[in-house]
Length: 225
Image (tube, rainbow, N blue to C red):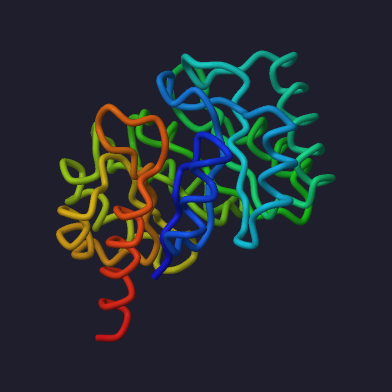
């Protein structure tokens, strides 16, 4: 079982690695749901970390309906991440009716080349999650980050379990949103093999290394059963 930490800074990224995370999703501005970090941040994190670094590709806060100019910016950001040796990128594109935009998604996938791809929580906004999953599976997306269509993964736990079953190992369903050491055990009932969280305690600005260690220990113990 894998633990991905949403790291909003170099310090959070280091805490993730030192806490035993399997990889990070690097971003900034979590107050708006995250946007693409600076290339200086990405470069330094790549220099300091040994675990895989996935980078959020999102040019702004707000919705996930992007103009062609915004898509060009995202493509350039993806290419730069590849140059820096990042292992993956994270993005999501929707139509105005909140369905998956397959054409723009595929355009960004082509720019990603060798890198792994996660479709982020834009997935939670779609009107039909199973149709959206079929679309992403047909496109060849490797992973979907989702809270089960709810504000956090614990509320969406029922749909998360259904999505894991429906994905049938063709697409990785990775629960995320409000995951903490005290509720992670409950979420294991979804059958998911990967989990995503920021591990930022209320009032703090960076990921908490002790919380990361606790979640890593829970997943490791479960994997030994």
